Amino acid sequence: MKKLYWIFLGAILLTFSLAGLLMAAEPIKIGFIASITGPASFLGEPEKNTALLIQDWINKEGGIKGTPVEIIIEDSKSEESQAVLATKKLIEREKVVAVVGSSTTGESMAMAPICEKAQIPMISMAAALQIVTPADEYKRIVESPKAAFEVPKTQRPWIFKTPQTDTQAVEAIYNYLKKKGISKVGIISVSAAFGDSGRKELKRLAPKFGITLTADEVYGPKDSDMTAQLTRVKASGAQGVINWSVGPVQVVVTKNWKALAMGIPLYQSHGFGSKKNIELAGGAAEGVISPLGRLVVWDKLPKNHPQYTVLSKYAQEFEKKYKAEVSTFGGHGYDALMMLIETIKNVGTDKTKIRDYIENHIKKWPGTGGVFNMSPTDHTGLDHTAFEMIQVVKGDWEFAK
Image (cartoon, rainbow, N blue to C red):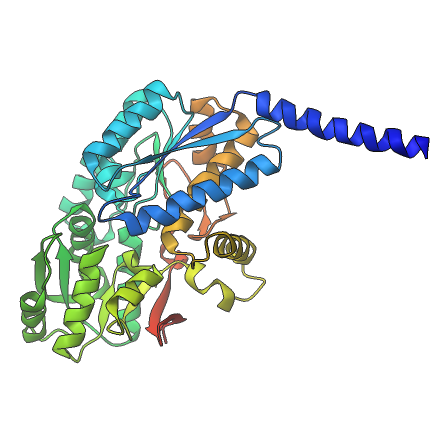
């Protein structure tokens, strides 16, 4: 009995000693910037919740080799200027080892030069190809006589991203249209960074897939009625309409499309991957098709799929903790943070070693957005096969037929 007492006491002391060591150790600081408030909050809110979930996971397991992880979360308020201020604060005052963020293309484009100058790894949670591609290289691509077939040959050295690119989303939509025998479509996009980038890719890649653009309409980020633009798309003889935007305006387009009874399908960008869009559309989203990652249909995948284990754990634990369904946006945060944590486990907190590891050693890495294969010429690490074409059916996500 006395022996058991001493074993029990020893176990308690060991537990408290380990906990004490963990609490006493200087944490590894990771900066995290998201659009938690403002128009893009439906992106940033699940990203912030994901960051908190992962911080709990890692520290309950003892941190990274005994060192706790502190994810310092900043709200960009959906504004580029605030994202810039937050980036400087995280680098200069908090001395973070890497920055994850932000939620939107415009914010990420504003943050990238700061991280490049400071030579600190940044992993964006936004989609545009330009985030990871130097401006002169992107210009070369879009102005090339063979623009539709060009791919980047260089990347911004310190900038990575986890969402599939707008280029890959366009390829997924155009491949689907070809299978459906649709060759004439009208496009409509928002005049913001995400919409501008998607519009350029839709126009650039159309010839490669034999697609004719019958209309090219643009609307403002605060517009509340796109009936006029959609009416012109319908009159152009389009067999379908593709909308490129995120946030409330994509719901407006969906409602307008339904109200006009256009008689042609509506394809949304990969920015449509939140159940909130379906709810806010109030039934108008039925039949809408978009290229999305497999996170929204994780429970419909075979269990031997390479992403199944990651998707099922993240989705179930997120939904258990927050009583809300996962979105692809939270998944982008998951991929960025877990990629960083695996990297730090392997090479420590040296910023150059972190950059080099992500670029050269993230291979066949299953995340929520796909199976990543980073390289010096590809700082996204995904291709169009990371997408599934998903349709809204009875208020839920289903594989599009």
